[in-house]
Length: 354
Image (cartoon, rainbow, N blue to C red; front, top):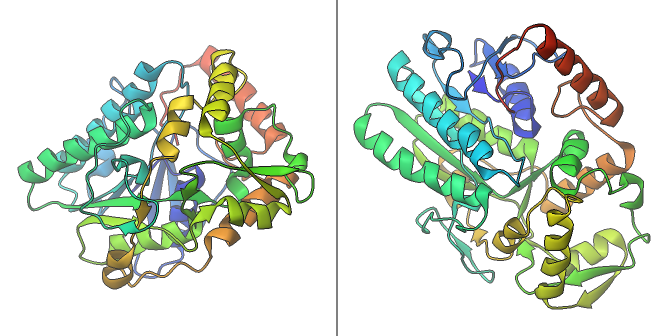
């Protein structure tokens, strides 16, 4: 069972599982059933939020539940994302235990980690208290505490926590532009030589990973008897020098203060959806050591971090997407939203946010 199966990570996880001969069948749960139809996969439209449909009957008989559902917006209303991301996740966790599912694989994140070093990588023992000002990191860290108690209550249930770096693929480009930059960023401008300079900010050093490589680790966690946390990241770390090469631009050293002030002003005016608190968190996230995933999952990313970002940028320029509501390109996205609004006017449909 893949909860939140139609987004950036979910589509890659479903595809990886559907191609694995060790997996008999895959059930994808999402707010809206997609047009995309991978082999041996069936779909259900369900709701993870409090008051949604009972998840226990859906989970009964499953060998593993992979929980990926997450809402990034609205960043101006953190109580709404908390309702989906935290309370909805707790509903999923409780339903897994009640249904007797033997394995829960949860999508945590590098964002769950406390601020850490940029000159060396940390393993899974690094504290997971997040950056408290940002809703995303606060919610990811809170769920780590929930799972700490959950594992104590259900010692026979195999719990895996995936903590990847930033995830990119070509088909997710339109969705990620809408989530983080908004519609004011023209994708066609994100190409080499059109960006005059890349800001070299203190702390601008993070890790990227191709979403399909993350999906390979999720697939391995389903079929192998592992438990615990796994960092997932590819080399090399992304910094201003790497971005300069990708954009064929020059590097401009500058303090983070003016950039944050501009972002904060744009966010307050609802010009961009990404909050300045998330910007603060990104500059403080540690680098990840993925040794445990390589050894226990036999995992090796097939793409470098530069490959993942280059593919994402190509997707931005072409307006790439998939035939799912979250990943739809801009034109198809408009049709999805109009159809969803019409369905809601006729008969409200509970939904999982992918």
